[in-house]
Image 1 (tube, rainbow, N blue to C red):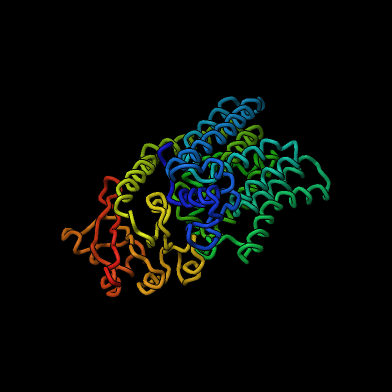
Image 2: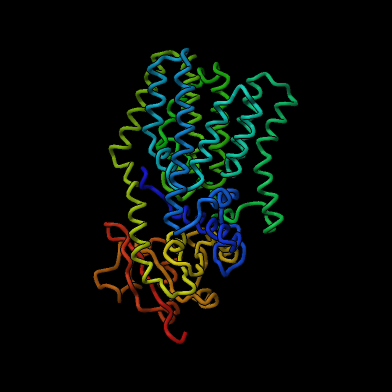
Length: 451
């Protein structure tokens, strides 16, 4: 899955490049400082790698993820191998199932913070005999992924209880696990006046999306099948603590409404801990039941891969080609409006009007979700946009460029803007920029001269 990435990875890259260059914590070099990266420490961690072009920096971020998860994966493999009380085939099945989890592989090299959060979370559970280390590492994972705060608190307290720590130490471990999360919230209050990431406003939570997201994530990540063993989990205290923490994490994901990114990104950081819990539970389970779960998990993982689950490995190459095609067409522009700002930030150094509001507080405050904000043509004019990018999942209609308004736009913001007469009056000269080999792409509209 080395070729996989997501658009938001390039948002963090732009912040990191601006931090390194001295521009400051801002998405647009000419704009205000904004809280456009949910994992607050991530741009700082990326900054030492952020010299050069955006795609080069993305490649280094992907390598960082590969190295950190490779190290954590080796540690997990060593720990699994040392659990001789578990059947050898159950240990092999747990690692095999984890290897077949495409979401884990994809987000290990997506170029986002997910790989580091997953590595920290894995290290935290492997250090179960050292509760304070577990609490500290789990807390650092939650600093990178705020929705992991409940998981960090539960896993820290649970590990302390298993280690027979007293009430005071158990409570202390929970507080240590929450400290990095609280510190990030405090920084946000001091700098931007709100404790939650800007994404919370830009992408309001929705329980109707949260439940299906978690349900699908539990299937596509494959590994949770290994811990569907209530009696064995209860008899193995450490496994019970890890499963309880995973339940807390799943409920947190329901509360935040899931995520739009592919491959169950928000569930991925806790998946390796469930592989470890599955091994621990197998020591207490009936071998026939363990064998059935192992075969089911392996079969599910193989089936998902066989049915095209790994197709996302083409995303990076398609995105790099899109950037190369768009770069000359965006040259000389000063303010580009787009719903997808990550790849655009790799194609131009111009200021970007983020129609999703992920990096723009004014847009984030508008009604609607991040693909349905109430953005109209007047906002584009007020913000002096000299170009507009609209995504077409099915490409242009048969009539060609002139029929860009009649094209089928899959997202509410773009459909609304294309339907507005004011957009057509103020923007024209459509150019189509292909994305991938399936006909998708972006219509680039330039501001009409004199407007």
